Image (cartoon, rainbow, N blue to C red; front, side, top):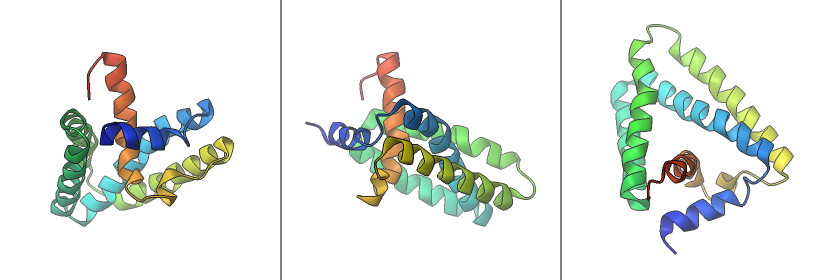
Length: 141
């Protein structure tokens, strides 16, 4: 079994309940955006280094996932280029609220978040969601 399939299967084990999945479809992108926004508020260069490092991980998983996550990052970063003030405050508030949502989802699921087992699942979550989109569109990853 390919590495990407193994990680997606392991991640999926604690994301089966429909309510938890729905919460993740909202909260994972919000967490990703807010983390990028916090890094961007420190410095666009810092955010770029983080994105580059994440893309190396996604390349390790699969080339199509890496290309898709690059596009996702571009969509998430674009609004950051328009922000003028209070980005850090907004990003922090979104980050906290979205993590509260995630923990509620896992409470409903009855299973711990995957990243408590292995920190790389913090990067697997967004890719796992992209995998759903790819399957829906018939794109091999």
